[in-house]
Picture 1 (cartoon, one colour):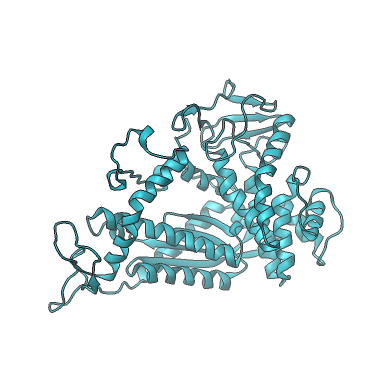
Picture 2: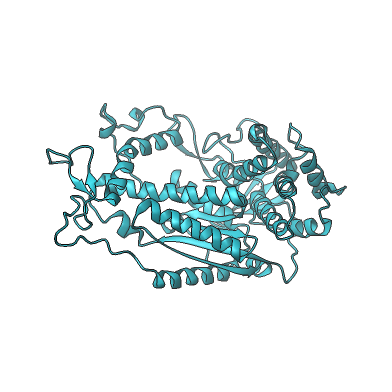
Amino acid sequence: MVEFCDVFTGTVYRLGDQWLNVAYKQVATLLKPKLEKAGGLREAANEAASFWMEDYYSLIFPLRFCLQGEPFSFRKVPFPDDSGIINLESAPEEKGFRAGFLRGTLPPLLPVERKERTGELLADRLLIQAAMANLFLRQRSAHQEAIDAARLAFLTYPLLEHLEIPLPAEAEKIARFLKEKGELPYGLDPDLLLRVKRGKFPDDARVGLAQVAVQRIKRYVFETPGLNEIRGASTLLDDLTEQAKKLVSKELGPEVILRAVDSTIVFLAPGKDEAENLAERIREGFYKATGTAFAAAAWREVEVKRLFEDYQRVMEELQQAVEVDRAKGEVPITEALPFETRCRICRTRPAEGWTEKPLPGEREPSLVCQVCITKRRRGLPERRGKLQELLGWLGLDNPEPLGVSGKEPKEWVASAIGTEREGGFIPDDARPCSPRHHLRRRQQLRSRGSEDK
């Protein structure tokens, strides 16, 4: 029996062997198609990491709300409640596990199996184990195939008994070693892998840590009053954050990303130089795509032991370094000179071209700057895109059940504005590095569904 304590609500979930067995099977079933479509070790490891970071957390949160009855009807999950302790000692029979975001009744909750009560999910543990194995093997100049096999093994070894497809041979050998000992391929150091599994790192072990964050976001997004430009600026920043995630995932792996939200990305790297290289590439990408968005960045080498034991303080120091970089940053001057025609949208920067269609209230195409036309081009199609994304979350094909009238997409309005701090309470006390994965991801999912009570 395992007890999981929700750090947000203080609720304790008591999980029995039957529950854990069925939950493992459900998770293995959902992971299977992702591994099947992978074209090699590296792709399989990336798919497994993305599953735990994205898909699994969307099965869990919000913990106590789900969609039942009509596709858009939110209901409280019918957990048996007993004085703050929810007993889930038997496997779900009538009420099935979720197969997608809010799709089904029960979340396939899988905490780290410990004798004492824990607030750490299995996904948290596997992601940080895979990240540490990844970084340490890169520091030792291991072959890329060995790195990817070890990553995949760390992300799947608890599911070996339930996966219906075999892992690649070398990855399975490593997974078997982590599960029950055995021979290791590629000449891998067994002591290193066991240290990673147990979370016992040498005092001198160090890794790179970097953060890139767009500054003055409100100034960039709201510098013009047009809804299309506001929507376009916000969407562009979201897309660039996603591109930064893809860059880090391609170079190192999804599991090294600690945070990627609100135009900010925080990630681990084998060393300071690798962290600097990726951070500068991300910062350059933000500026090239937007023309004016100012991104600050910082990187450093940190002790792994301190990262785990004093995570909050390490992150505060990194943020302070970002603020120092922000203070040193130089923003280009974009105001129009007296003899230059100003942009019709922002009325500040010099015009560089014409709009494809007249602006509202005008008869002919208008002279605009590149920054504003980029925002406008991104914002126009997003009016429908954001609504379709919302309908997808609710399992609807059209907006009629929501009471939205109008035949044209431009008549549908769906707006959601939120920040990370508004998404939910994050405890400020120092916590281990690994739980941060589910704490950060949970905020995004709570803003989609409904807040846990």
